Image (cartoon, rainbow, N blue to C red):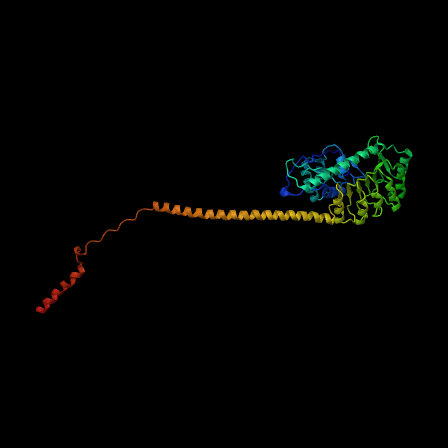
Length: 425
């Protein structure tokens, strides 16, 4: 998306409960929607070029955009600016993304369905579930899990409070130290307002950040909390200098030269919570180093050589950690299809049961129909018998003795008289 727009984020997260057709699973933002936005929209609305101050490359950035027009209206894609721009005619200047090729229909349909389901972002999906009713029975293991979760949440809250107290003591970086970072190609901005905390980015530098650029951060090591080193091409020694940024919370290393060995320095950062390793050479071996990053909560591994099982094992072992391999990772695809297969099997079983029940109902109906037809014929035959005219009685024959003799029988006597006369002569 390239045309500057004023959009508004209207999230009704968790307030809508929209029925999905045939029990479809909820669409996941991180694995199904975010990759589309990164690939098709982040060129103009990403870290390097946030047109209209809008970034669509992560849930955090969308959520941080604030209330400016109707970017997303949960449950209502036709009122959501994001979806409206995708379905405009090809010759409309406001259609997004810019260029001759629109988003494929399948991706547009997926985004529409996601909005219909509530436009839930990854940050919202991690919300603490509502507690069970007080009178509901709870198994011992579930109670133990809940207690552990509550303790972990309390511990994390305590850590954040301690962090805030420590960060409140941070003083402003010397002007010459900030200037040195700028001369190395970095952009430096306060995290907010007049805060001494800084966000530094080398993503728009004329050349990829190298060891010298990373060395320039030494003067602002205490102040940097957000750092973007996308595309950086440093050596192991250069990456080792990142470990000095003790207050670093968010680190972008997309398409950089960081490797498994370099992650040892990254894992040493005591407060890093967000780490993006998209399109880097990191493998399963690198995950072993990252296990030491106890505060890590978001780990993006799209288009890396990390396997599905090691990534999921790491996520399971670290409560609160979300490891994202991307929607098209073979392991993610297999897991999704396996889940869809189970859903399809269940659907077939339910449909088969319904078909069997319907067959029984049909057979019973046919039996009732046959009996009704037989009764109909019986009653109809009885009615016809009542309506038939009576049969006429035959006349009895006269007594044979009273009947006159037929003329033919008298003829022989008449003929005999002349014969007798002739004999007398």
